[in-house]
Length: 101
Image 1: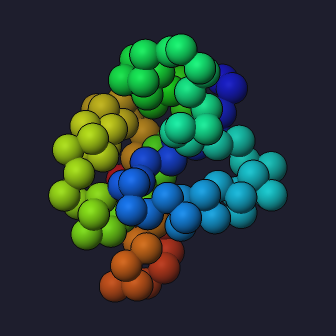
Image 2 (image 1 turned 30 degrees about the vertical axis):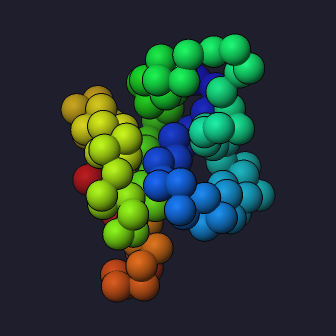
Image 3 (image 1 turned 90 degrees about the horizontal axis):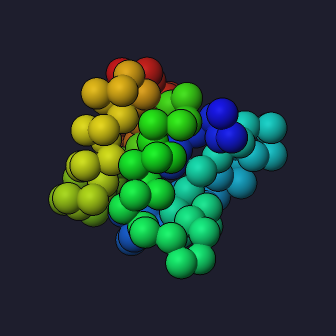
């Protein structure tokens, strides 16, 4: 398994997502995040499907934008069905803890 975490986020939350990736990778946790980990010339959707299946867990950067994103919804659905889901509440509404679903 090449990566521990698949990070799912809405485009509007990219700065937050990449800050989370930097923090996780700074602690030795290998992350897969689009578009950074999609090889040039690859089919975007196919790479995401394979990455979700290959990672140990999906971490969702949850925000209003992510909640309204059909792309994020599909990533989460795939991860839940594969038993790989967690969340990080970037809205400040949660208690800041990560939980496994």
